[in-house]
Every structure is written in structure tokens, then in C-alpha cells.
Image (cartoon, rainbow, N blue to C red; front, side):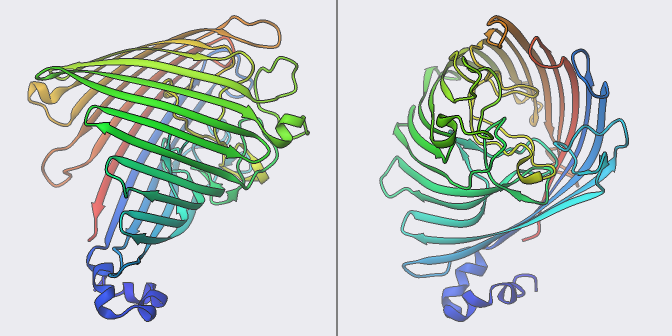
Length: 435
């Protein structure tokens, strides 16, 4: 009955294509309800001008429909995404801005929601998506660290016509923040003027089963042009032991209004003359050795001196309530900080363990410590920052709530350029397949 109702939801496709062509469209359709219960407690230690504590609890619902494709040389499909966030607990003095819950004045709003639609076209091994998108690429990572995910508007073309090679290109024009009901333009952290033109293209080439090579280029009108080169290699040392090497390099230079110093287009953070011009090189190298459920990662990241690392962010563009917050593809992206400030040198040490090796499948542990120095400010260039995170995850393996994911996160940030903070998150994820 539910599948039959999809004919009503897609009348245009149903009239253009025959019933035979529509068969795969309906037969391959999926409807999934994702539920995320999210609790966060932030304790600000020093250097914070607002309340010393933020505590909020929310429930997110993600209803996601994915159709199949009509039969024929050119397949047509439709995706739909319905997002609803509900406040469970918050209040005056405990609500900090609107990066976790949407805001209604100086208090948390009771709910926020968003509906997105996506048209899909597929020919051979090439697919074009137009509408609501959640890209996960080296030059743009959608943020999914709150009750609801961040989404973008635009188009993405993905082609896998050549074995081992994936070509991706696209253009994005707007975004909806993870705690927002409203669309805004795109900028960088600190930018006050919108850009509605983010373009990108890149390739992922699987040279063999052990080596992945990547190159991407992106352009945010009036802000920057960025090049990314990456290589990921996995060496099977002996049976049951492997060494994974991950190299990433970003080269980012100013464009348009940012390059000319036009007001409203400045990047946040240190720049040599205070003009806010983007001029950054960031590279990182990590080694992750895995054996018998254990994983030990050591790494280093270097951010050049002339500006912060940048990727698309919304901030508070256009008065978009709840638009703040973004993610990046930095190796050092963590619970509380991404360690992407000008001049920042970061040493990374991480330990993980998969308890399946002890006969407890679904349980995993991650401990991460990052220590940095050399952060540049207008007064000097040797500020420090460090973060320690502990993350415990468990996915129920059987019973009536099989698939329920439980995550406990604790982050501890001590910084000379940002407020010190201790944070605890408790996140429950459950996905229900409706068909």
C-alpha cells in the first residue's frame, strides 16, 4: 500500500514513463526512518564571556526515501529527505547560540524542520543528482555531528565508467545548517557576505587494492580556490596485521572579493596584515597500525602561517538561525576543535580497540590526544592548544532493538586561543527500515 502511494508522489514520472519502466523505480525503492537522541553538556573553564555551562537534549528524526531508477538508457529517480528536530530539554542560561538547537530569541526553539527533494538521472555508470545533497568529499564534508545533518542545494555528477576511477564534479548554491530550517549562502569562517557559487571537480583513482590516489579542485566565488592531493596506502604486513598510511595536502589561495580586501569577505583568525586574505597550505601524514583489534595511529599536521585553513561554512549568513557549525576533511578534525589555525603544528596520537576480538562484537573504543604549538595571533606566534577525546561506541547485535547505536563521547580542550572546555555527549542512533 505504501509503495502504491508513490505513484501519487511522482505523477510526472508516472505519466512520462510506462508501467514497465516504472517497475524498477518502485521495486528498488527504500524508505528509512533514522532517529537520533542527542544530549550534550559543555563546561567552559576559562576565557568564555557567556554562561559557564551549556546543557541541551534533543531528538532528531530523519525520514529518507530513495527510489530506484526507471528502466531504459536513461534512468530517472527521486529521493526525498524529511528532517525534524525536537527540543527535549534546555532553558535560559543553558542554551548557547544555535549550533545544537535552533534558537527562538535567547531560548531554544521547540522544533525545527526541513524538507529536501532530489532528482536523479543515471546512464550506464554515470549519475547526476540535482536538489538536496549531503556531499562527503575531501573539499567539502557535510556536518552530521548534531541531532540533524547539514544539507546543501545544487548538483553533483559522479561517473565510474573507467574501472577503478571515480570522477566527481558539481556546483552548490545554498546550504541548510544542522540546527536550522532556513537556507543560506556559503562563506568561510568569519565571512559575512554570501557566495552562491561553490564549484568542484576531482578524481579518486584506485590504482590497486592497496593504493588510492585523489585529486580535487574547488572554488568558492569571492573567497578562495583550493587544490587537494591525497594518497591512502594499506600494507598487509602479515596476515591479521596492516599499516595504513594517509597523506593529505591542501593548497588554498584567495579569489575575488577576498583577494581585493572588500569588506565582509575576510577570513577569521590571523593574517599577516590583518586584511583577512586567505593564503594557506596544510598537509598531514598519519600511520595507523592495526593488529588483533588494536589500532595505533601516529601523525603530524602542519598549517602554514598566513591564514587559517578554510572550507565552506555558513556561520550566521543571512540571519540564518542555527546555520553555524561545519566539518572539514582535516586529519585533526575532532570533537571540539579541528586544529586548523594559522601556524598550528599538531602531533597526533590515537588508540582504538574493536572488542569483537575479545568476543564482544559491536563494542569499540577510541582514545585520541592532539598537542599543538606555533599558533599565530596578532600579538605573537607561539600559542598552544591540546585536546583529549574518549569515545565509546556500542551497537546492539540482537533482540528487539537490534542495530541501536549508543555513543558516549568526552572531549577536553585546553587552548590559549579559545575558551577551555570539557564536553560530554550521549548519542543514541536507531534506523528503522520501513520498506
